[in-house]
Image (cartoon, rainbow, N blue to C red; front, side, top):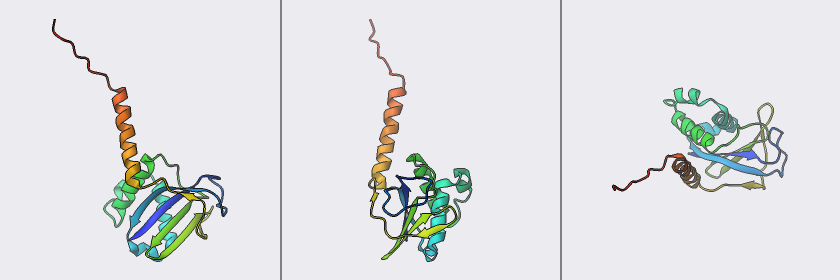
Length: 151
């Protein structure tokens, strides 16, 4: 298995990545190791995860890694992330190997490991925070039941 992490450029979205810019991890997911032989193909997969319509991914759920793609894309959107675009970075880790690829106007550019990056924490924490926020919103908008005592 490989771990694929999408980092969004927090300083200059939609502009080519410049070394030293702040990146924020948007999502991290596992992917079968078969694709790792071609890091650019994995980056293309991550780009599609962050941009492709969920209806398209829904129809591809029965393909290899299709379920992973669909569920990761759903979480990516539920977390409120913007589309993956120029200036964003994909990190691929397979064992001791690491690839860092910056999204360019056309294709991907290999870059050294960025030093300014943040990680919002484990994905489970983010899911629980999202669920808590949904529950809070639902309880604050639902009509309150009022009890009346018999007279």
